[in-house]
Image (cartoon, rainbow, N blue to C red; front, side, top):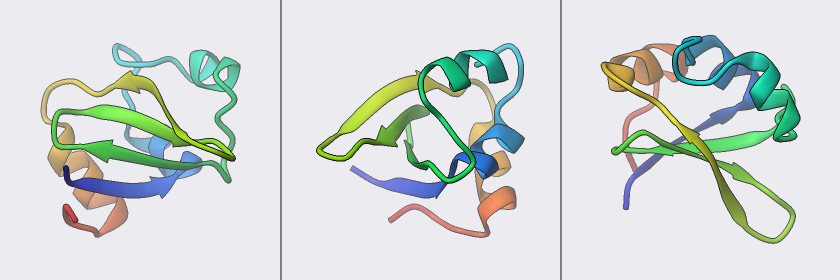
Length: 75
């Protein structure tokens, strides 16, 4: 599976309100320093001390938003 990793702060800039509201992300434990990754299907996973947890998903044209924000490609 391929992912693009980013910080929680970067994720908050690319997520639209119809996907996940910032308050929802905060309740899930997301901070600016959190490490998150998104797969090609749009699943958002957050790094926990011992595992990755799926915390939500992106919709629509998320690939271009992610690449524009991070400057990264799928690995």
